[in-house]
Length: 449
Image 1 (spheres, rainbow, N blue to C red):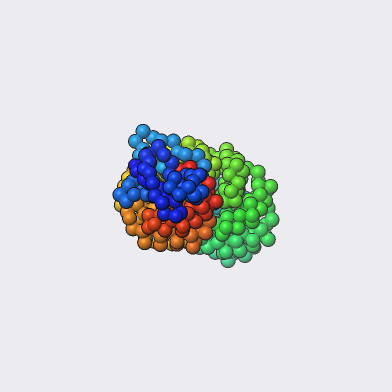
Image 2: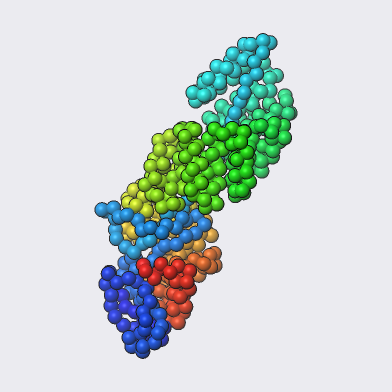
């Protein structure tokens, strides 16, 4: 690849090759001798390797280590961005208890059989037993709250809520019914309803582990991470083996940027319940944030063995493959993640980078367009799309995208850097120098790309 340079006074000189870094600062201009910044001039028609695509954004985890290159990976000056994971953990528990008595021995036998089936995750069998218990004693509020746990695990949240409502009509002070209904509300994203039900359950039973766990999960999904940690910690004081509490607290630590504590909590969660797929997913995301792509791949693969429908596990593993330099695996997992959940906006950005690194510019542009269409406030995606327009010679659109990126995130070094390249191409060297200086103030590593 060839490029030349210019100083801020407009003097131009030289050619470079692929061994020369782009964007380094020179001591002086060889023509005028001025101690000014050297602006890299990207030639039209050159490959996108000359444009730097890297940085962090709200949903993008910046990585300080370069990716390992797989044998088939296209070379280029890409700095790995770890790919964007916001772990939306909705891990709620539905618990139940049995009340035995001579007056309802037959009913309790079915409840006991239902419990055995439930623990073996034989939900159809459990449902049949609990339904028979209700037939034998339709006025027993607890049975409805218990059966709600089966509907919950079968994914029928409306029936779970209906059973909890029936339970509360029979016994308005049954804490378990509130706690279990909160679990269903939580998975319907009715977070305020979930918090209200959990708070009422705690008022009625201050020892309700599931109420603290579910309220913690609701706070987590609202972004109230300190409240989530407090509720999960209280749950663990009541039950130190609660895998759900460890998993959700780990997710809250993740969002606060405390990846080591996130890993520790999720590790405890899987130790207590090796079948908890979301705990592996959350730990995988934390591994990814810590730069451990191999650990992320392993954990996401285990999560998918436990729950093959877990779209976010494909998404995180896709990002890990990107950091490992395996673009084809990145795209394959991204495709599967989006097939299962097209709302995972950040996956379009990750897949776009993989396409771009493979030289598939049209596909990359389409992915960046899709990401922006779904989430117009992702600053980093505008910067990436601007890089494509820059290499296509569309200066106007490149500047527009960089401007929009900086409106959304005034500290996004990459947008300043790419815009400096556009200005330099247009001969506006003073503005190019100003943008380059700002970019290097925010991210000195850009000068070493």
